[in-house]
Image 1 (tube, one colour):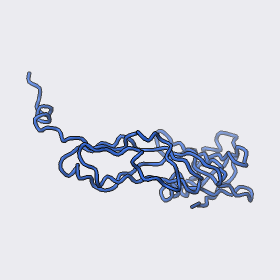
Image 2 (cartoon, helix red, strand yellow):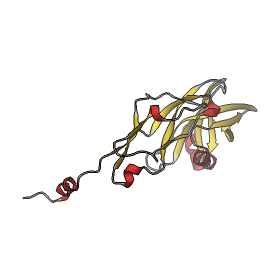
Image 3 (cartoon, one colour):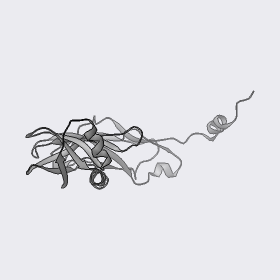
Image 4 (cartoon, helix red, strand yellow):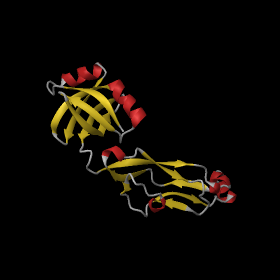
Length: 196
C-alpha cells in the first residue's frame, strides 16, 4: 500500500533557509534514486510525523514534484540532539518491480508457558533484514512465543516462510530464548549486602 505526501522543492542556499523552514514547521529533505537526480525538498513536519506513526518506515510514499510522481521509501531521517525533533529526511525513489532490502522489526506475541512457571525470557534479536518489492515490504514481523517452554528458543529458521518477502538475516540467528529460573539462593546471595 502506498500513501501520498506533499513536498516542495527548496533552495539549498543560504544556510538560513533551512532554519527558516524548520521555524515554519517544515522539514528539509532530499529525494534521489530511480529516475530522479538528487533534489532538495521540504515536507510538512506534522504530516511526516503522522505518516511515521500510522504507516511506519517501510511503506511506499508517493511524492509529487513538478507534476511527476515518484514512489519512494523513507531511506533515513535525523533528529536534533537537543530537541529530538526531526531535522532532515531522505527519500529514496524506487522501481516498484525491483527487489529491495530493508530492516523490519521483530515483535513478540503471545505468552510463553515457560515464563508462567518462572523461566527468564531473553530477546536477542530485535530487527532483521528482509528482501521484497517495495509494495510487499513488512514494517514488522510477529514472532509467536505462545508454545515456548524453558530451555527452548526461536531462531530465524523457525519463522514461517512468507510469500511476500524473504528474510536475509542468517537463519541460525537466535531471536528469543527461555532459560531456567535462577535459584533463590543465588538471588539472595546477590541481594545480600557484602560483609565488611
